[in-house]
Image (tube, rainbow, N blue to C red; front, side):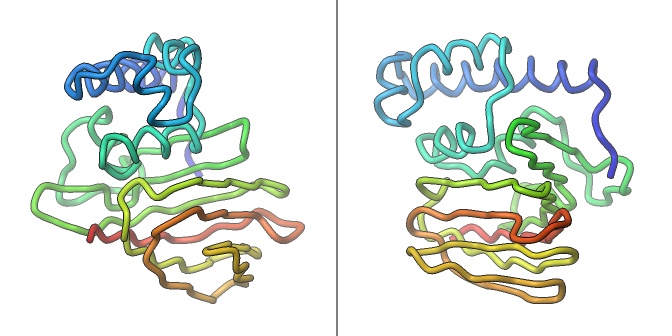
Length: 193
């Protein structure tokens, strides 16, 4: 899996921070109001907007819920124009290093299309909890390619092994956890309601 070079990753963080500040301004929110709506501290929001930190997947998910867009939509806004054909080497990769999560936008959002494909990789022990969907009713199809993945939806844990698939609509909290002793790699198909 291709990883961003430190300078490239820093540039993405800078563009992401600027876009987060733009979105807050477009929605007419103060840092305090955004903190209250998202459940993310003012200091974390401020540091993310100034690109002093790279926000975690959980923080981005909370902000996406406030702004009514998926994480892929947000990331595509800072990664540039999305072509119809994306070669493997050109597919944007984003990492939440602290959580052990790598996300590749295999088929990022595109104007006029409702679906996208994401490749996720969770390191051994990685555990991602999302307290809300970025868009209520979001349709997801999860297909495990390698390892074991536990996905919790509505307080029910679904254990998936390589080749297994889970499909659902997301209305509340979800959790993705590497459930084995090797990294879990999966495809996530996301369809807007």
